[in-house]
Image 1 (cartoon, rainbow, N blue to C red):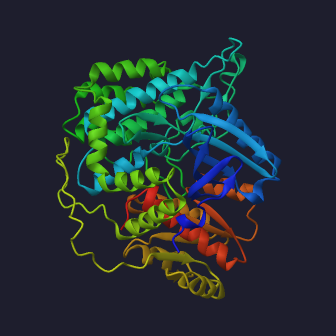
Image 2 (cartoon, rainbow, N blue to C red):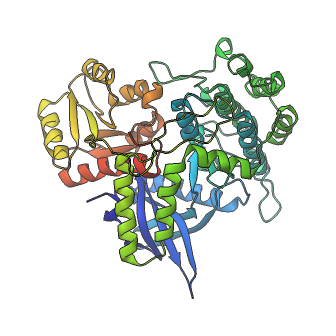
Image 3 (cartoon, one colour):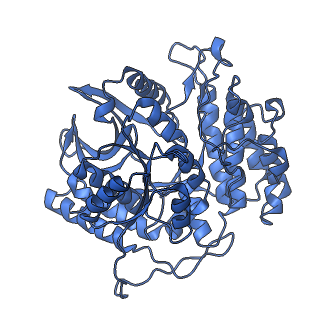
Length: 500
């Protein structure tokens, strides 16, 4: 039974679940359908707190703060929050469903095609992101009081391009809405390694210019096609001025004027950066040799993600159809994602991709490879249990009892998922996760932690180093298999990387 079918038809408040898209260390995400009078139908994304965190007051406050900030913002380039509900023990957000890909996926896919993102698309993405951030940075509440919102996590995963060519900034989960008197008072160190500004890393007060630095990192990576700051052995990626080279030296299609925009955004001294996101957006418009419009951006997305777009379209069309049709579509979606039907034989040219040729449907499909899971635990008995439990649902488990063995295994074929015990004598699971996330080929591989505590502090630390989920030890066999399958389904169908 495919994972997607497990959630169909379930009700969360007034929303009917179509499919669970992902489950993380703190919340789970669903595609759902809101129905109204007549033939009214609306697809939404639901974000719901995991059951074992609903009694944690600090996390609930954090969840409500995210809802408060996100719901207040209304801009074409910011994902919208429609609803916050608390019914029984359910606490969830209803958000705009975005059919598209985040920038990390665009970078990954173009890299696999031995290509670079077109300069015109990059310029459009940065300009529109600047527009969204400028609005947030200058937000005024209904009473007319300035309440700047600093995102603090502007990364490739939090900027999306829809299949129709629009740009959306998502996830204001660690953003801060500040009254005018508090504009420079945010000092907690939160954000994603490799994208935080120097002042953010040092826990100093931040303002809009910290988002401008992060956007500069993102812009550099889009133009150069590679990471700018790779986390070191401890997981930190301190901005080093000696390591920042202008992107036009890496990608000859980038004009020097556009490189200058990037380098100004990446100034280590905040006073030397653009004063506002609006100013940066204007500089991009003036320096860019061309700017894609939505139609051309949509054409690029259709070229790069043709197979996945068809799978998503099939799911969305079936969402309002007869239940049997929905079940059939989801089952077909599962099958298609396992086969990896986005087979491409012609890579695009470096900077202006030509149409990609899709292998015809009647082309023979090679035998399916069993998904491979690397399990790392210093307990031999625990590894044995993992092999049995995951083997029963068709997963191949590769075991390692030490970090050295684990990294030796990773030198071969990359696994489809990784399970790390949090407490190990030579190196913690968190430290291993930091190192794994530093590798380009494993940046989007699901990483799940095993922990006897599963405390909020552990979950927060796990998310900070790039983990995706926590599983409590000793493992419940059915829950373990479901969690692993859910992450494999996420990356295969609507997730962070293409099927193998």
